[in-house]
View 1 (tube, rainbow, N blue to C red):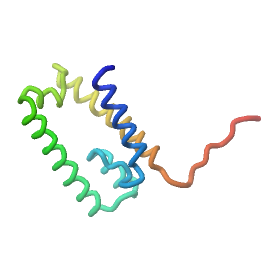
View 2 (view 1 turned 90 degrees about the vertical axis):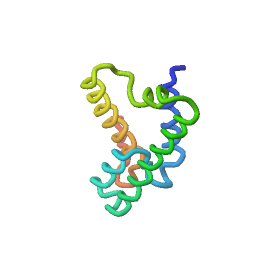
View 3 (view 1 turned 45 degrees about the vertical axis):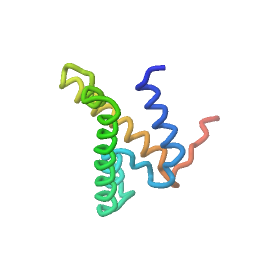
Length: 116
């Protein structure tokens, strides 16, 4: 199985398993969306952002210690065209954030039957 697909499925499983604990603040973009949606306060968002950036730094250092600088570089992107990489990152992040917002939504929405 493709490593990226495995990582995505692992993240999806993590969201489903522990989203109820923190609201699935796995990414600074998610925290920004939660702040804009009124699901978290500014002070909580700042705390999440500090933790997220610290966690990303520690994870990169662990990869660096376990392998090489090239391995850390490949965790960023493999695209040669930077514009394509940025566009793809924006689109996939938007889908990721939308998914988390939908999964973690509480109350106010019940699916309606479409049968006649």
